[in-house]
Length: 272
Length: 248
Image 1: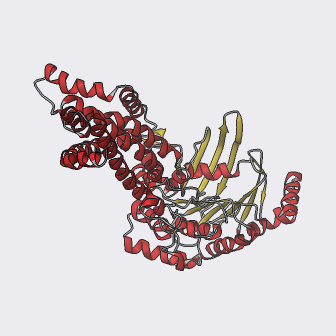
Image 2 (image 1 turned 180 degrees about the vertical axis):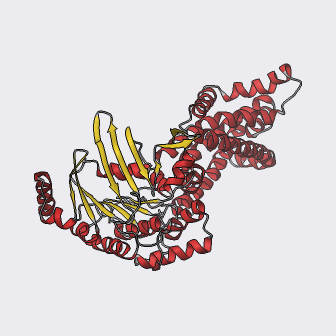
């Protein structure tokens, strides 16, 4: 089942420019500097996990990409388009809503608190986006919803109301809702942090499935180190708004070079 | 006293009913105007555009601060003096009440929209919805359940305030009571009957709003406790704390 419009299967080493590029990105909240001149790139099809202590800027990176926040300085490029500026008559001007909507088309996000719409059934939660923003027909959107609910193991709940679902089920619906938009980039923001421990595995299994069967580029903020090791091509360790260390999951989890990474992983693995 | 109060009321019931009908009509028309104004101005008040917000706060501050009674007099008696037009007095009353209550309603709409969790807006952005779709599909349906209880109060306030039309010669419930009191000399019974009828109209309005509230809450997945019925609608609803979100 094709979940993404991306054709072919470009791995992390694929030719061409990066799909996502952060260029000296600065993000401040008042006096609090969350990202300090951050530079990094993500290739199409790559699955990158962001780890690090809370407040280190991981979630902010996802929120900037989803255009829920704006940068204070620097540029974020998605497929060659800047998220903060656009070109008009050969000049760079601040991005307008139309530009943002065009860039956003490629990006989907799953939130820590699911954020399903309580005024809609599961079916509507999944179909409203494709119908109203992609112009997909109702029949096609319904078919997508059914296929995706099958993927996340909740086909029987298609006409249920979000309040009738457990947290884990709600999060699986939220994943289906994001995938129904066929994004090229999927942002996962601590998607299991709000769940009871016994519900975490079900959600992670779904995401493992998505990772194995599609070529969607994934940026994942998580404290689930086992999951990070299984699905990601690359792990970025953040500390105080900078990348403290980056490498393959084997290297980061097996032989971390930085002391900061070692202490962080030790703390997470002890409590986890 | 015996059956005198009952006789008094039964004899004059058609007159009172007619007056109540006028009161009800003015209430419904005033509410319709107030509702439209409240929605438009309330939504304008939530926008980032300073002009939109300026218009919204100008309207609310102006019409909250003006007595509906004086506004009605002004429209009924001053407009014919400064323009070639004459406003129908009932229409002037509906306009004055609608403008006045609409200003309160706009604040309710604005506050209810702002009370919808920001995370819902973020989810609509993640689905790349336009502002109009976000409002229509997600934000307003959720804000609606919040607005209804206060809207119910405003409708009843408007209904009671509609008594001002009796001062410009419209035969509403209050006017009927006053005329019958003068004609019969039975002031206590004449106004007592009007009080009872105002109360009955208010209960009808309350039941109507509560039905809408139930429907709105059901759509948000909040079910009312068992044992509902018509009488239960006269009590304030107890649902509302079981919103979605959070792990279980």
